Image (cartoon, rainbow, N blue to C red; front, side, top):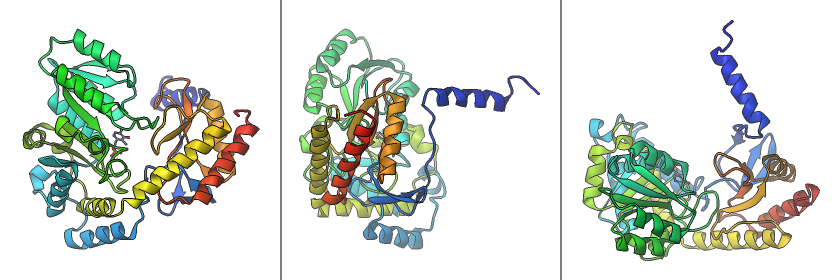
Length: 394
Ligand SMILES: *Cc1c(COP(=O)(O)O)cnc(C)c1O
């Protein structure tokens, strides 16, 4: 037997992450994504999906999906530049551009593709990217893949960003990139200040509205819409997989941006297009998002209820001001114990550990849905109260 054989190496590596309480396991869930999910045979309240508006199992979306399968079949055949661009994608892009108040939009198979494919197509080795320290992994990977110089500014720290902008001027093109709603902390980027700095320092701006699309703004188009900054952002990215309850992602901006990405974005060109049924489903989701603002209102009410009650119990929720509520614990093992204690009380709250978040900031990441009832949320608070006391956290 080889001493450093393939399997032995993997087992050794796995043991190491298990030892550090960083081992991850896929948890099978029965049935659709809803407020209640069945895990290990137990019915639990899910506070762990990004299906914020409860659209993933909505009858209108399912109907749109089934109808689209009948009309367009299953697969898209190839990349859209190869097999031709199907009507479902075209319609969705037209609608997305309206929704985001931009000239144009381009659909990607996932948000991961969109961020990698956009950052790497736009930026290169003569350029520099200013990136928030808590940006999503797909932005980090996109920055790295682009080959551009990268300067990471302290999370939401505008003085630090300004200092870096002043220090690093000798580049061909400069770009600031941020999540608008941070995925693991639920706080919000100071976008108006960022736009101001970008203007003063002649820098492009890209935003990732993954957790804001469908949630913020009068029409649910995101933080950019809420703040009226549509004309000031060069690149607006978002996903269809979270509040829209579907799958895929978009980049919205001017015609030339979309033309450039169509020609140069490897995350768009070298991958099979989104399922046409997914495009049709996302279109149905956009209709609902615009027609039923009450879902956003319920989501905000539910988020406030949970934030108020949990902080009153003495839990540390960081700076969350959205539907993403981190219950900050710190130690990996205590976070895992809390997850288990909550599960035993019928609550599914996902433990988030490094490298998803910085070392020593492990947490239970709670994400209420618009469709949770107040009673269900009170059940969650009770579970936290009991579990927190059992573990000596509160
Ligand atoms: C989820 C997420 C993505 C990736 O989107 P997918 O469509 O799930 O690939 C990108 N950015 C942020 C901030 C996210 O939270």
